[in-house]
Amino acid sequence: MPVGTSPAALNLAAHLEPAHLELARDPLHVELPADVRDRIARCRGFVLEVSASGRAIYGVTTGFGPLVEFAGRPDSAGQCDNTLFHLIVGHGELLPPAVARAAVLARLFSLAQGRSGVSEQVVDSLTAMLDTEFAPAVPRLGSLGASGDLQPLAYVAHSLRGNGNAFFQGRLMPAVEALTLAGLQKLVLDGRDALALVNGISVTAAALGLAVAQAVRARRTAELLSALMTDVLGCGTEFTSVGLLAAFGHPDVAESGASIRTWLEGSTPSGARPLQEPYSIRCTPQLIGAAGTSVRHADEVVRRDLNGVSDNPLFFPETGEVVHGGNFFGQPSAFAADQLNVALVQLGNLAERQLDLLVDPHRSNGLPPMLSPLPGQHHALQGVQLCATATVAAMRRAATPASVQSLPTNLHNQDVVPFGTQAALTALDQARLLRYLHAGLAIGLRQAVHVGARRPQGPRLAAVFDRLADEVPPITEDRPLDTALGRVADVLDSLVSEVEGA
Image (cartoon, rainbow, N blue to C red; front, top):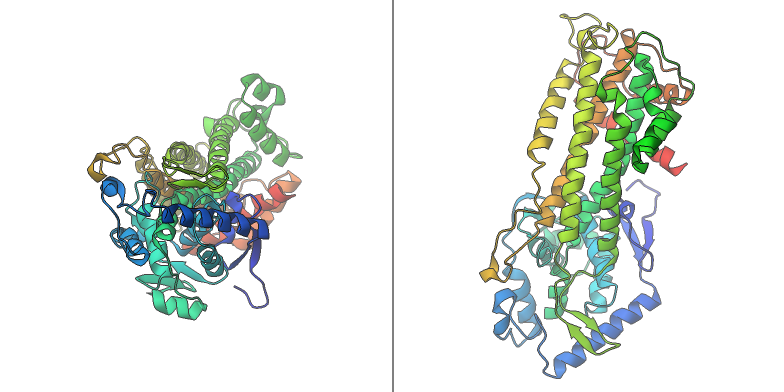
């Protein structure tokens, strides 16, 4: 965090939104209002009262999963160890620290609803962690998204107890060392605390929420770049007609058309283009708008997940009920993530095809091949296009739905599972890859003007072009562009965020 800045702040009484999850990448101060503390304490008291009565409670007095018919450990510390230790078997690459921290924020909001029966010190520990640069080290593979994100959330608790590994300031180290550097105390849990920490879909919700936040920007970026391409090439704008798109009957398509039309204000066609453009220009409102519908649906689903309670059992002190059920079953987010995944791939297809049109002299009004100032001596966008092709291929291969890949496990206790965690993490991967496709297209548009295309006529698009030109000098001779892609991706995110916030 830059010197002289303070952590962002978030109130647990508020609704958790996908954009809030992005704040968790840095120290985040989460406020715990008195009424939230009261409901947590009331539920905790009820759990202790029911436990003392001898009433059976899953995970408190019993074993876990199909071993529910056997008694659990008689001591709470042993029950906690049993809960967590048998789940510390995940593998694969570690989740980025920002994703792990977002999952902690999502879990904190679920526990703060006062239905899980955790002790106040659990929520205090999670809020304290978020206020630092500590992040649990969480392997990517292990969750079915069925009984919650058991294994990844077990690693969250494991590291907060000072076991395994963790990140501090982005460096991986033993968790006990990271806790010390962050000024945090080891988390002490009983059996109910431990089960409540792991028995929810908070990793799924966090990954999907982060994917949605980026997908919202990606949709707007696709509109911006489509408008910029239309202007730079001097294309006709009839495809954005209000009446045309209204007749189609899809509100999100009409909205995308309006966005492209707004960007194009002040631009006039050159008259040198065909009557009907290729679909990568002419059908952009329909494609981007349809993707926007999928993004909006995923946004609605993940907001419900982030502000609901994913756990088992749930406790209702006001009615004296302990209810065993399946609120840890992440099917809604699994379906939404898969649908979002497909939409992101199609936006990637669009960006790759637009770049291909731009570097092809037969379709770009005679711009030089690969937008090279000296074809053969310099290759300009040739490497960028090769990378774009490889990226789209990778995105397509990852587009297989996860939500229908159910496999029975756990002695057929989990006989049907949604794999929402894998779906959500894949959607997040796709959103990040799409940023680089958009960046490559933006660099191509910047270079097109340098080698003969017209400067954008629309005032807003001209301002965008100037921002891109400031970031990326023209390619006068071949040079590495890998770091430029990252910088331009950041500029595009910033540009569309400014428009959204205006």
